[in-house]
Image (tube, rainbow, N blue to C red; front, side):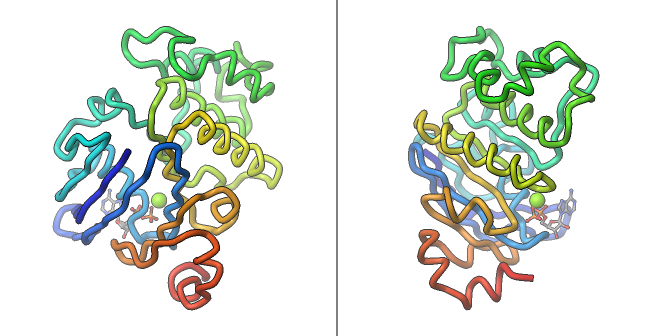
Length: 233
Ligand SMILES: Nc1ncnc2c1ncn2[C@@H]1O[C@H](COP(=O)(O)OP(=O)(O)O)[C@@H](O)[C@H]1O
Ligand SMILES: [Mg+2]
């Protein structure tokens, strides 16, 4: 589904990504873990074309490095950035509609607005009120649901559990499992091991702009040295 090969990225003269190589198969949940500042968000932005990637990014076999972000979105990559960027003055329902691709009708893709309301009754209850009144957790759900409305084949979700209550973290985990059931691939960016170890099929650990470990959650559990050097604070 996604094949990233020797990807580099820069902010001005700072060489941030230094040869990132990773892949995600269909329906797979892949976690991208690492401490703050190692380049996880930059990896997502580079795949998405918001930061210019150097190297190869292939999506469904097609080279997308150098394409514009809206083209990449239309090809089927959904991106949920770490700041929950809802449109606060619009209603929950209007926010969801904004997730549809140009010309796409609600219900034409794998997810309908009613699916979202069935999964998250809080969103249904507040369908017609301004999104600004939603709690932090509800705003996180809304951002994820809005991205799914565009019917992506791959979603990249940046730190979805940050600042959420344990109960909301479980809701996020449930949604990620549902995404995987519908054969959608997921790149889950997290700092803590938390839900990643329970739901990911595979894990990449990043340090200083490179992948420093790749394996299954069990393999990471067995590597105390990797966790100590690259994950624990
Ligand atoms: N817009 C930017 N301009 C300059 N430097 C940035 C910018 N965004 C991130 N950085 C730097 O790039 C590095 C990687 O950041 P980021 O990808 O956000 O890390 P992570 O998501 O893993 O916390 C950090 O050193 C950060 O300070
Ligand atoms: Mg980040």
